Amino acid sequence: MNFLLRFSRAVDWLNGQIGKYVIWLILASTVISGVNAVIRKVFNVSSNAYLEVQWYLFAASFLIAAGYTLLNQEHVKIDVILSRLSKRGQIWVDIIGFSLFLTPVCLAILWYGIPFFLQGYRSGEMSNNAGGLIRWPIYAMIPLGFSLLMLQGWSELIKRIAFLQGRIGDPTQKREEKTAEEELAESIRRLAESNAKG
Image 1 (tube, rainbow, N blue to C red):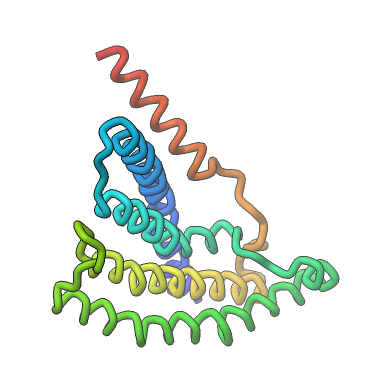
Image 2: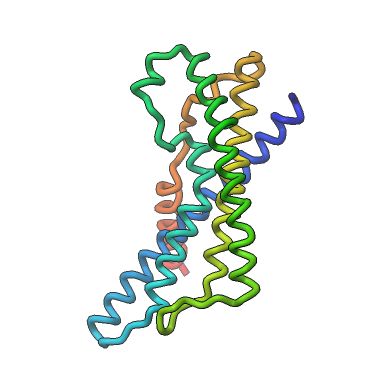
């Protein structure tokens, strides 16, 4: 079990690091959207590439951050039912969910998603829109995102089992840390301050 707990901590660290930085993709998507709107209105010029890169960045942030979201217990749960169960009952619901639902769904998506990505990569598939982008980078987000989600599911499963064995504290307690949004705002503030000084 010690090896599995070390694996769990490594997965938690990986998804935690990814979550800290993936929010920049949303900021980039927002900035590109704003700049595209201004250029379109002021200069009457636009490109489908601008629209598609926004979608790519948003989709990438959503897929890549799924594991981070699970790590921070922000996925939707049926609290009306769970709140009526004891803590051990809630943990067993999680164990069943991670084992019988999350893992098989992730494996099925990987089974179909990896060949889908490889086919797009080999063919160099392009968007059907004039001036559109190549598609394989966003196709790559499907196996990447679901791999990270499945790993985090396994990490959560390990923690639930370890909790039932009395090896660790309650893994469902939310940690008091800064959110990714708060860290992004702090990073932007520090960047602005360093630019003002320099």
